[in-house]
Structure formats: structure tokens, C-alpha cells
Length: 121
Image 1 (cartoon, rainbow, N blue to C red):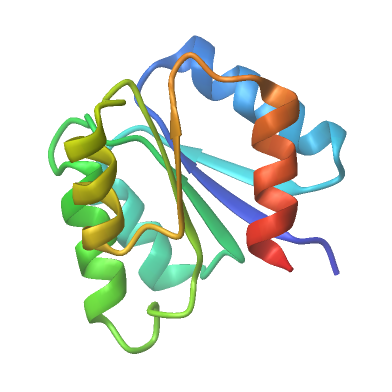
Image 2: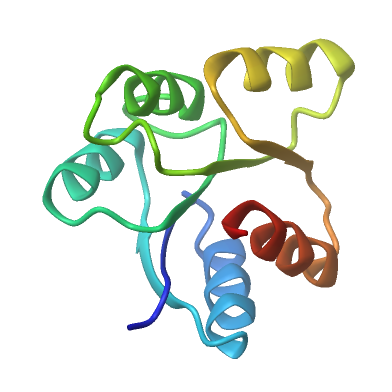
């Protein structure tokens, strides 16, 4: 059974880069474009990992992450925040919301893949 990763990213070109790199590493992916859709997918089809942008339409990535951590049935899903918000106080806020890892944009796809593998260990 393949490891499933939910990509929550509203920028289509970046979502495709993420999808391409993750599928190249043999991960199964699903892409959603906003926070509300992410929560609907999470309730229906639990992935093994969420790669989550902070700045999303409808519901922010921080709110999505907090919701994941509050729901017992979702709590164990690892979350990697992937965002343009790279200041120290932003990273702390992301970790405080429940992120397992935090990557600032722009990012190296190779580093992202290494972090995905590390979080899934």
C-alpha cells in the first residue's frame, strides 16, 4: 500500500511541482486548493501526511492545522507547513499550531523530500 500525501496549496504551479516530486518518490498524492476542502478530504480519506500552505483561501493553514490537532481521529497525521512566512515568530506560530515540520518558500525539492521521509519515519 502506497503512502498517501495530501497537498494543500492554492498556487497551481507550485501544487504541480509538489505533486511531481512526491509522485517521483512513489508517494500517492491528492491536491486541494483551500482550507475548507482540506478538512472535508481529511474527514473522508485520511492521508499519511499533509503538506500544508499557510495562506489559503476559505480557511488558513494554521486553522487547518489546529483543527487536525483537535480532532482525535486526525491528531496522529503529521503536518509539514510549507509557506512564504519564514520569520522566526511565524515558524513558532506554525509549531504552536501543531506542525511537525516547517519549510519556508522558496524551498529545495530535495530537502522537502528528505523532510517528508523524516516525518514519516
